[in-house]
Image (cartoon, rainbow, N blue to C red):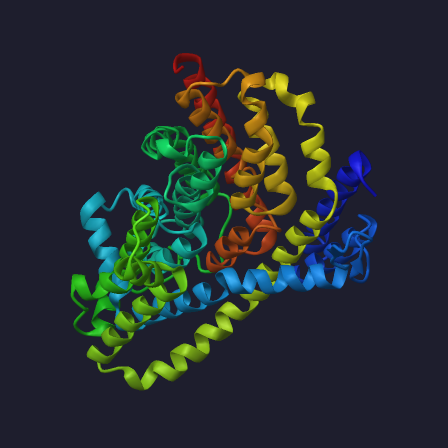
Length: 463
């Protein structure tokens, strides 16, 4: 099946998947895998690998499913495990409480949601949003306990800041790839500058939606003010003396610095043995492994190394379901990529070109919602739009950069069950999938609309 019928079938499949998960309480892993299998068969993906007359091999459905599953594990599986392990150690040693106290002193106790959003926005400039959320989640949890703020508000605030920088600001790979494809790869400073500017509206929208939805949706780890809870001072007393600020910050900040340095060296196209070492240390897996070493040293300093085995064991139990559901989402995205849907959208792009700056946004949003990956939506849309830039009337570097921003806005619209970030946010935020649709999915829709409104306004004055 190809063309418009395939798109309609895809829409029905997503609706059915949401109903299976939220209404019939079928486990997300089973629901997503079943939908992926059925959608692959309907889309006409061959059930076995086939070799064509020209010698090329077409992957069968089983191979596509396997590639989608393993690809997700290879990209963020170890990152999630190591990040969660760092978080567990920070909680056991009391470092998470120390970090929460540092944040509160910096921004004030009355602005914890804003603190988490801005923290996430800064961290996600060099770091993937999935990794950033896992790294910062212990601070979020500690701040929930410290301030009695809504857990959902804090989760969505953090998720918002991370996501905005992820799609707008280099050196995150998606914006860099899109900018290069659009022909402005040599103007990354302009891309970064406009990325910061275009973050304003979605940051505001994300903040207010986080505050709004936190009053209406509750997480499983929500602090109930009506119950007798431990005061912050009592929590500190349980740990004895808290770690120092540097010791508490090192497991988080060192990986961020390593990844940022690797991105800077890559942008500067530096070579040599030192550049290779930085690139190695700056890969998310190795950077978080270094962070884990710092966390383990902190655990040893607290005299709690005897608890290390149990901490590892409990961490793996926690992240196991997250990994498998995330991998299932990767399968759905791979099935969509292997179907004819992207080719059909690409071949009919001219029909939508009269929409101007809204065309790349809409196309990117369609691809994002269809296959789940913001980076794939950014790069694929840029490839489709690049030849059409003269037709759309975007020729100057500033105009083309705004097109890049519009693609980024679409690449966050919307995050749902086929997006690994959706599962990271909902699972680490202690929310069920149906609550994830009300919070993460709706928030990305609100932020995406806010972003394209700002970009459209900027396109009227910047040339």
